[in-house]
Length: 384
Image 1: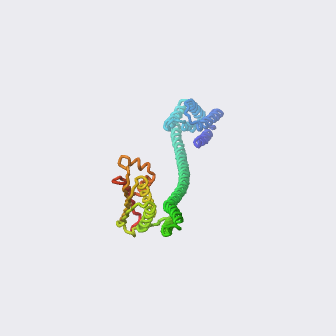
Image 2 (image 1 turned 180 degrees about the horizontal axis):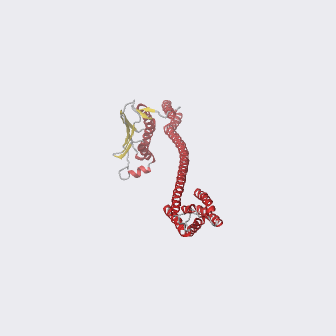
Image 3 (image 1 turned 90 degrees about the vertical axis):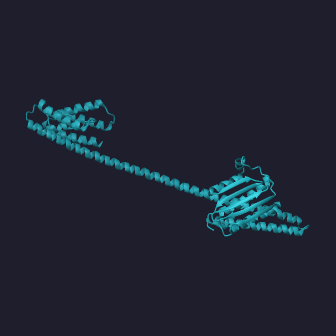
């Protein structure tokens, strides 16, 4: 549109000297009006039309001839879809032809002078158009830059919104997972102990009048279970309050001893334990320690329920890099290399043990060698 307006202005300027030199000024103005219409039409019509181009060429030729002056031939510079040097050559050649053939101008010097003026005018108009194109390109480039910056800013804004939403969702899921872990740990640690303590107190109540000493012993057992459960609750709350909570290997041993003691009281099954290969002051991640207590409960229960084991061996060992819990029994397990994958997939407890260990960078091992044997090894997160 800028080019069209510029061409129309130049066309008006070229008409002014033609009015003084033309022998048919009325037709000159009419041809000018037609050229204006064609220029405006071409500026909005992007499709190339040969008929329009031919009409444009004819009207420009008429305008140039009617102008009676070399300036009228400058309109050839604005021919559409024609190379610049062809426009300049055709306009100059037609001017010379008109001067010698139609007007029969015998002054060769004047004709050459006008021809030089014509060429200089072509160069001036070409320079003007080059500046206009350069300005338009710069403007288009700046508009594109602004558009790209706006799109980038919008994209970044949406990305930040998604990140905020994802962070909020992750924090919410982390809180839910933490609550689930705490509730599961409290349930595993306390639920069984309190249930057993209630049953022991009920038995003590029945024996109180008949066997008071036996009743007193059971009451003491129930008291010890409840105290142990209370300590488990306190430890769970401490872990909840402190994201970087640690437990020592000595505290883990006490937890394992309490689980074994309760298991023996409930089943009268012999459990051998060995903690000699780990230092009491070794520090462990609280989550790892709680997980290992759950592993021991799971393996003791499975050995009794599925293998009818009558004897267990529990070994806790560790160094500055790893802590390892091994549990073996003398039960009749059908676990073997052939069905191990299926057993693990079907066994929810063992499957969770493997999942947690792998997630933490640890490892597990399960095998049947004159009884079921399990090993869980976890990395030590804190230096001892």
